[in-house]
Each structure stands twice: as C-alpha cells, then as structure tokens.
Amino acid sequence: MRPVLSLALSLALAAPLAAIATTAAIAAQPVDVGNKVPAGFTALDITGKPRDFASIVGKKGVVLVFFRSAAWCPYCQKQLKEIRDLTPELAKRGYTLAAISYDSTDALNKFNTKVPVNYTLLSDVGSKQIDAFGLRDPAYPKDNFAYGVPTATILVIGKNGVIKKKLSTTDYKIRASNETILASIDAG
Image 1: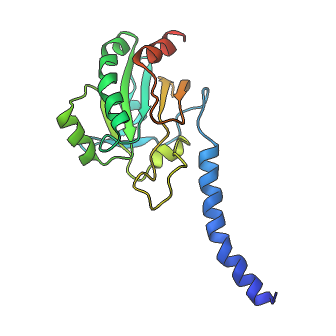
Image 2: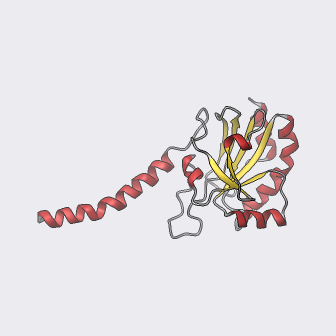
Image 3: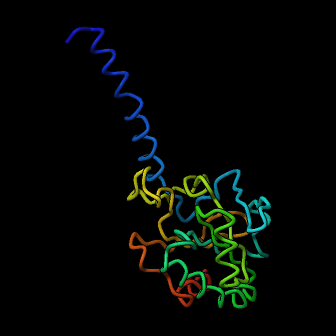
C-alpha cells in the first residue's frame, strides 16, 4: 500500500475507532458500591432549576433511581408510580428519593401532570450524568430514539456521596420492588 493511501486510511479509521473506544470505556466503568457520586453532578428538576447532589440528599442519603423514560417506557412509568409509596418510609430512615432519565423537563412535567409524584424528577438531556455514572445502556445506536437511556439502576447513596448499595439489571422489564429497596437500606 502506498504511504499516502495508508496514512489516509489510518486517519479515516482513527476517529470512529476512538469514538467506539470512548463509548466502551464509559460502559465498562460503571460506578459501584464504595465509589463516590461523580464530581459535578447536576441535572434539571421539572421546573428547569439545576440541582446538584447536595440539593437532593436527605439527612442520611438519597435513593437515586435511573430510569429509561417516563414518556414512552411502560415499565418505567409503572416503577415511577410504585416508588411514590417509598417516600414516607425513606423519610423515616433519613433518605430522600430522586429519579433521573434522559427525558426533557417537558416530558417529565407531562408525566407528573398525569401521575403526580412526591419526589424529585431529574432531566439529564444529553445523558451526561448517565454517562458519568457509567450507566448508559449500550444496546442503542446513536440513530435510535432510545440512545442515551440508562440501564435500570437504583443507587442508595449516603449523605457523603458514597454509593452504599446498587440494584441494577440488564433486563429493563425487571425492577427492584419497594421492599427490596427498603431492605437494602435497612441492611446497612
């Protein structure tokens, strides 16, 4: 192969391969128990107000639910309805509840109008926080409407930002029950 052609071919392949490597690195390094919340955590609540970690955490911590979409995922919609029942029990334990997805604030508001929730819904358009936590579901290519959704994951995070429990599944149809979430907190 001629040197100029070889260089051109190398340059043409370098950018896509780098993008694949970056995506793989994000997916390969999910946060785990003992890790801290990624620095610079911020997402928008349904009013459009930026929320950082300190603004969503309770006296002892927060249960942070990563969900696919309130707009189109029936499994997420069911989960978001069911976890409303957790807030009194979490409050007794010193925890708050927040749920985050790649949905826009408009989509979250529309859901909240239909199914009012008693916890914080967070919009992560562009999936920056989803990626920072290493939770982007790799099943969806860029041209798919679901590109950027997280794997269904629930994190129990202490007030200090350290992840105490992680309940995660690769099957988006299966979600931890309220009892399982409370048991994971009670187990310490």
